[in-house]
Each structure stands twice: as structure tokens, then as C-alpha cells.
Image (tube, rainbow, N blue to C red; front, side, top):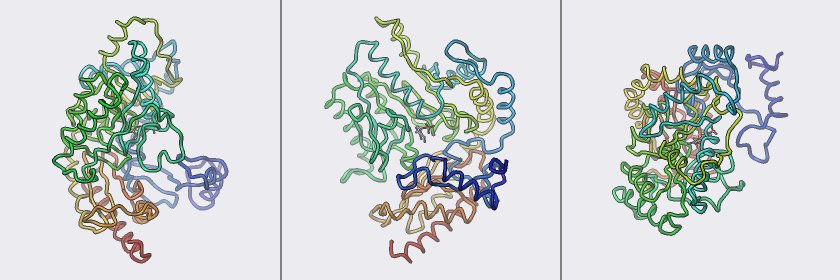
Length: 466
Ligand code: PMP
């Protein structure tokens, strides 16, 4: 039983590392280490903290993977999880349904913007995006528009790790060694105000992006473009917050050209920006489909889904092919445990946590912004409780650091010594803590991050890398 113990100290830790290195393939491994890698062991979590293999307490800066929204060791969610497993642990969504799935569907249908009154549940974010894209294909086939299948995505995007969702990814290195359905995807410019195309001012940037969108429709033809997929705030691409009226203008163009606007809210939904869904409430843009995952259960159970406009279902019902089948579903669609956990999670969000995020977010961002004083930091940007510290070689010209500087990893290593987990993204550090974080914990987080960056600057100078 030693190997299954949560006590990860000493010999047991070594034993677990050995087991992992011999048998466990971790996500996103590199060829030289595949199936031969043990990552840092996390023993337990409580609130905004986790405990590492040595018993050190660390602030969970990225809330796992932007998902532990209500924090670790939440008894309310754990109780619901247990109770639902004892009441009904599983039912086949092929020919039955459960009470939690129907109740959650109704609640989400009321919370989602506009006429997004229906939900299809999946197992996570990739399967949500995949479901949305397959739905778009089905929708256009049934409407007699089989050529309307191209998908518009953007540089810097991350939409998942299944074949079609991953084909949309646009971050550096994501697609270097992996195939994708490239013939189905058209990439647009990343709406990153900090790294605009040469010669485009901040003021003119939205017009430029909208003009590119229009030119792309012109080039490929609206009758060949099925969907635009975009995160309201690009998360894994480095917390890219688009210029103010960008999303409403893109949504309007989509509507005009009968292109489905799929808003990928896998990160931004369920409280990260202080709202259940952010597309309309924060950005004023009405999507046709919203994909979600992560925060819907605060990571206590794998669940995702897509909210779909009832208008689309109406069109399908009125089509010439009422018998056409959307041949798509997952064994774990509408999982009763996931749906029950999500109901309780929503209670917690609506019972003060959303208000807390809206109240504390300005403090979170203003404190992180003070890190811009450090010469290695080019920009600190954020919205709600998600932020990114971007490091640069040259503060004034925004020159990026060489990829192999691995500055994010260096900062993370120092911060872990000091009591903070960071999500390193090449030259960026992402901060998206549990939504329960307090002012004092924000102070602690920023103090450690400042020290971690300061130590990294000293290392880089010493090694002649900066
Ligand atoms: N979309 C976005 C915006 C994401 O950030 C992620 C995951 N980081 C996904 C989709 C994929 O979700 P999952 O890993 O749950 O499949």
C-alpha cells in the first residue's frame, strides 16, 4: 500500500517517482523523456494552498489549470460528490437521464446569454470544442450547405488536444510536430495589443483586426466559412485581452455572414472574470455557442459542455432532413456526479464568490502591476482573476527573450522554493489563483513573485543570458 499513500515524503516519494518514470506518460512530454519523467509530487490541497512532496505549503498560483475556482478541500463539493455516487454513480445518457443533468441544464440555460438555452455535456474542454465543431459541420450539412465548413481561429489560441480542436491551436510549438486538419482552418492575427503588427497603432488596432476578418471572408467566401472560434481572453496564449470593441464587431460580422460564433469559455466561465459567462456580460458579444469546462466543477469532477442557441435547433427542426442524426455523444455525457457537483459549485459562485471576484480583482491586478518596475518584466496584464507577467529581453522595444532562456521555468523554480506555484509559459508566468483568494494572500503571492523574478534576473545576468 506504500505506493498509494498520500504521504509523499522520503523513500515513498522516490518510489513514486520511479513508478511514474517507468509507467506514467504525462501530458505534453518531449520525445527524449516520454514515459521517463516524474513531475513534482503534490500531496494535498487546502483553500488556495497545496502541499508539496516535502510538506512545503505553496500558493496554487494557477489554481491547478485555471480550474480549482472554489479552492481545494471544499467540503460542500466533496459531500455532494460522495452523496451522488452513493445515490446514482452513473446512468447511460443514450437511453436514460438523471435528475442532476436535467436540473443543471435548466439552470445553465437560464444563466447563459441570449437564447443559449440548451446544453450538451462533455468530459472537458477539448471534447466541448470538438462537439461544437462537429455540430457546426452537422448543422451545415443538414441545411444543405456542405461546403460551409472552414473554421476561423487565431494565432496564440488554445482550444484543446483532440484532432479538430487541436487543429485550431496557434501558440508557438503546439503544432511543430503534430498533424492537424489544416485544410479546414484559417488562422487570423492574434488580437494582442502588446504585440501588434508592425506600424499599427493601439488606436487603429481594432479596425485593423476587423478589416483582416472582412478580407478573410472576402477571400474564402462566406459560403465556405462555418465558424469562428475564439476565447474571449486567450488564456494559455498568455492572457491576451482583446481591444474593447473587437469581440462585438467580430460577432456582428459572424451574424451578418451566417458564420457561427463559438466563444470558447473553458477558462473564462464560472467566475474567473466575476460572472458565470463572460462573453456577453464582460465583452458585450452574443455567441451562437459557448464551450465551457474546468471551473464548472472547480476541477472536482471532469465535466465540460457547450451551450447552444435555440435558434440553431429551430433551423434544424425546420430543415429538409428532420431524420438526420448528430451522431456524436460520449459515454460520460451528462454524468450525474459531474452535474451534481456543478450544481453545488454554482451555488457557491452565486452565494458570494462572484461578488468577491469583482470586488478583489482590481486589487489583484494593481498589486501584480507593480512588478512592471522590474526590468525583466515587459508587461503585466489581466482581467478578473487571471493575469500574466510577460518577461522581455528589452523593456522598451518589447523584444522577446530567446525561447531557450526558459525564463518562466526559472521563475517558477525560485517561486516554488519561496512558497508559490507559477504556471510557466515560455517567457510568461500566468496567475489565476482560486477565486477565494484574500488580500493578504494576494500580497504574499506578489511578494514571492517579485523575489522569484529578482533572483531570476540575477541568474540570467550571471550566465550572460540577459
Ligand atoms: N479551451 C481552452 C480555452 C482551454 O484553455 C483549454 C485547456 N487549457 C481547453 C479548451 C481544453 O480543455 P481540456 O484540457 O479540459 O480538454
